[in-house]
Image 1 (cartoon, helix red, strand yellow):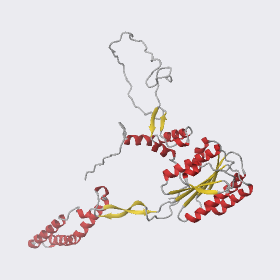
Image 2: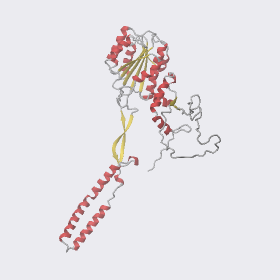
Image 3: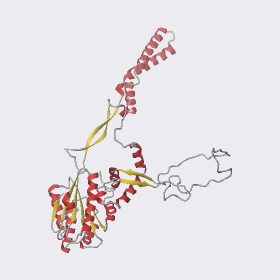
Image 4: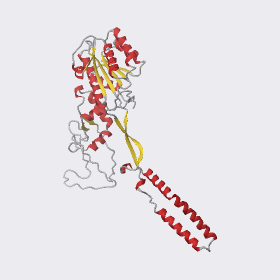
Length: 424
């Protein structure tokens, strides 16, 4: 049965979706590096825009096989009024093939780099290509909107030609022929043995010999009438849809907005969380994001308040950790949810409260979370950084990094959420 697939996806003028996808797959590494370089030169609000990607000519060059001219050839060029035989023609100075402009080479030969534009979706795909939530585990089946997968479930007698299993069909056909012709073959063997005995010892009984030959020929015709292949023998691969456990995750974003966090540090912390929010929204549909701002008191806020509120005050970091623990107990059971935490602060805290933060992490939060990342905005070794350093040595699901300027946000983010630790 002939099948025809028509691709009705919209594409731009003079563009081929298939060729573009093959091109993007081939130069995946170069495009990823270009995207990372572009991130450093744009603001966090422009992070989701497309980008013009430039590939050096050495990366897009193709191997070429050519035949040399060979032998001695004489060529006549019509309209020649300047040169005679034996003259050497110099290369044109400037404006060679593809190398014009101010960057043209001295010998007139050159080649422009290849420039093309990737869309916003393609930019974000390469931007978050090799990142994931660490230690993510699929925990349960969701009755409202489960995820499904297709699995093999034996063979069936009806299906599409593409699912036809030739070997199994031939095996069934052979079994059918053996079953239908088994008794006939047994009788045939007996009659052939009787015929051989009659031919050897009873040549004087032609009537009996002819009768045996007629019966043998009748049995052979019966066997030949058994079809070699019957539509009943066809077997098709069967696949069924089965529900999959779904990974439910919640990310707690804890940001210090105390007076010690000046505008520059708050801006870096907000950029880090915007990057984290974009990453979660793009890669994980079933991920809740809880925003917690804190100074002397912590409060759960909306996305708008988290990124734009100007509230400030003193510093009690433990208030955010306590609120996070309360929300986990009230709404997010560790048996059903993958719990993550990301905290950004300048590290300045009341000395007595920093030790309490360490105790809250090691005693309450880290046993419940898959991963907890602490980002200190600033290079100074504050008391909170010193306390968290003790936590780092004894807990594999805890990580801490420093960010001093905006250019370090993306490298630190990649280091904290690089691939390699997820569990299906």
